[in-house]
Structures are given as structure tokens and as C-alpha cells.
Amino acid sequence: MSATNQFDVIVIGAGINGAGIARDAAMRGLKVLLIDKSDIGSGTSSASTRLIHGGLRYLEHFEFGLVRESLRERETLLHIAPHLVRPLPITIPIYKQSRRGPVTIRAGMIVYDLLSFTKSLPRHRMLSRRETLEQLPGLNPEGLLGSALYFDAQVEFAERLVLENVLAAVERGAEVYTYAPVTKLTGSGVEFVSEGKKQVALASVLVNASGPWVDYLLDEASIESPKLIGGTKGSHIVVAPFAGSPGNAIYLEAESDKRPFFIIPWNGNYLIGTTDVRFEDNPDKVCSELWEIDYLLAETNRAFPGARLMRDDVLYTYSGVRPLPVTGEKDEQSITRRHFIREHPRLSNLLSIVGGKLTTYRSLAEECVDLIFRKLGRPSPPCATAKEVLPGGVNFASFAAEFKGPERLLRVYGSRANQVTQLNEDPFTSEILFAFKYEFAKTLADCFLRRTMIGLNSDRGLSHLAAAAEIATDCHR
Image (cartoon, rainbow, N blue to C red; front, side):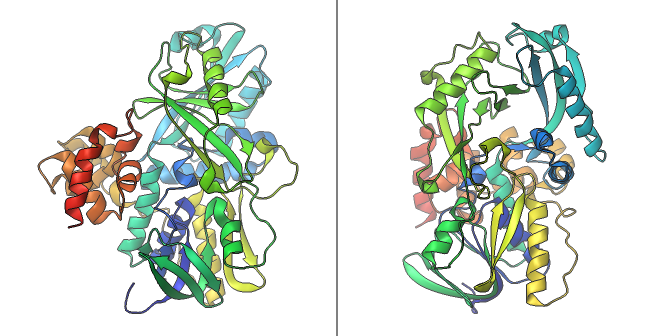
């Protein structure tokens, strides 16, 4: 920690919301400390469907404001993170037995286009049955009426989006502690443990951005508060390309329960998900259950009969808990994805972040930092996070056109790729060194799963594990 342990704001939780808040606050001149009990982006942020989307299905619940905000933020992220966020064509097949018929789908598409009037992505198209099967020959033709083709965006490596927000915050003076669980919250700051030692940091404002752990943090710190989080679990499976696999993302209605799910080309494989079920246990214990895997396999096989996917075809799974607000008996799909910033009457300088989406993290952060300045009693400088490009996105188009190294480095590091390759003649060694020296990695899991992204390959990076361990050992000598 710096010579003084006094900060303007301490942000607890280095997921996408906490990282975004830290970046915005640091850019506006506040002295910021960001801490997390695990690694950067290791919770819910790494367990999403990896979409930057406007929330097409939120239209059914008349959440037009949320859709408009999401579409605006999608456009912003295409601009500030062009190396990580890219346009994604998505097809919605329409069947006779579908709950939503052609008229409903077309109406939704029109509203979606109208709400995204400032977008740079193409407008939707309605495709006939013949056109749909020409584009998707492996799709189940039985009862097929046609489809809708529209565009959203994909963040292939959401973990990198979180990390780059942290890197941007650090560039503006923020301090970061990972693997530093908070043990106490007080009116003047926090106590936490780092490398086995108790640390104390003081701040005028505290932000609880710990996602599905929001209530756990409040309980552990003895802060009286009503329950804030009513989380639901989402699980995904990853499989290799299969017979008839689609060339673009597919947004389907599950035959068994009519809920939506995606089949998405991702990282050379296919990402399939998600489920949506209540989860009341500790988020640290979340995992994919066999019934969820079987559900996703069965629905994929119904949509693409030639796939014939079985459990043995699953390369790996991942799960996360959505930090949604408590809503009683409401159906999981109808729980709002809007965010809320809760104040605590008995600890007036504490704010807790409830809900939110990967897509809208930046606008959530802007709202939160505006509130922080009001609590500080200081005029707020204008927010610039919608205009200032993230570190790897600086001059990305021109850099990518001239870059001679491996293409995957562009997908992971953007215009920072040259900084990686300059460390060592061997690209793999360079990436491992870069993760530990410049990107706050402390473990091989950090390095593989949230820095180099090698751990998300088909073999989970196991073929590179021994070599990486040797390099990492050298780094710590």
C-alpha cells in the first residue's frame, strides 16, 4: 500500500462493476483502492454468455428503458473496446410450435431497431424457411417457418474486459489488492487480509461491488441490512464444432420449458447456454449440475439433429450466480436485469451494488461515481469513460493492420500485443511473463483463465501447464 492508507473511495469487488467504478472514479481524480477476495474478474463476470446485447427479451417485460440503455452501451463498448467487443450476427429460428410466432418476432425486431437508432450495426432481416435452411443447413426443418437475423455484439473474453478496466484505473493512480478478503467494514474504512497480514485502509466512501457476495460481505462485516440479492444460477457447456453446427449465433426457444438459450461460435468451439434457476447457496459453491448439462445437450440436439451430442462431447462447463435483486416468488426469467445502488442508513458512507449486466457496467459506474461525489460534497468532473478507449483498444484498427505476430494476441491484448512480444522471442513465454509482471496475476489459474486465456482452449491449457509453471517459478525468484 502507498505511504498513506487514506483513500477517497474503496471499491470491494473486482468484477466488471467494481472495475468499471474504479476506472471512472480514478479518471475523475479520486484516490481509489480496489480490493477483491479472489482474482480480478474471477466471479460472475467470467461466467456470462459473453454477449454485449441490448436485451431483446426484456421487451416482453416492457423494460424499454433498460433496452435503450443496453443498446446505447453496446455502441459505446464497440468504440472503447474494439479489440474485445465485436459485432455478432444472431439468428432466431421460428417454428410452428414456438411461443413467439413470426408476427411477434418481427414486431420485436422493429422495436429493437427503433430503440437502437444511433447504432452502427445492420438492421434486422426476416428470412423465409428456404433462406433459413440455406444459411443453416443443419437446423431442424420440422415445423420451421422462417427466422429473424439481427446483430448484437460478443465479448469473446469478458475476463479481459474486466482486466482492462482495472489497468485503466491503475494508469490513473488506483491501487489494487487481489486475494485480499475484507474482514471488517467501519464508518472510516475497511480491514482486510493480504498475504497473511491484516491491513487497514481508510476512505470517505465504501462501495460493496461484490456481486452475488454482497449479502455475505455485509453479514461478515456485521452490517445490519435486509437481504439484497436473490441470485439465479446460469450454467454453460462448451463443445467442439459438431455436424451441422451453425456459422453464426443461434437464439432458440427450448422445447422442454420454452425458455431462451444460445448456441454461439466461440473461441474455436461452441458455447451453449444458459440455464436460469434459483440459487440460495454460497456463490463459491456454484457448479454445473448433470441435469443442466443434459438439458443443454438435449435442446441442442433437437435444434441440430445431426449433432448427436453426448456428455462425453462436453469439453468443459462453467457456472455463475447472477446478483439479481430479491423478488420473492417471481419467475426467474422475469426478474429485472436493471441495477440498483443501495445506501445503508446505519453506515451512511456505504453503497451496495445490486444487479446489473455486463453490457451496462459503464453506465452503472457513471451513476455510482456521480453519487460518490455527492456523498463527498464535491462537484463532480464530467465522466469520460464513454469516450476514452481502453488500453488495448488505442489505435487498434491501424495497429492490427500492421501487426505481424500471432492473430490470437490481437484478440487478447489488442494494441498492447507488441508489449507482450517484446518480452521474449517465444510468444508463449512472453504471455506468461506479461501476466505475472504487468497484469496482476498471482497464480497459474489467474494466468491461464483470466490473462492469456489459454485455459479456455479445448484442453483447458493442460498441455501448457508444466511449461507455464516453470516460467512462473522463475518470475517469483
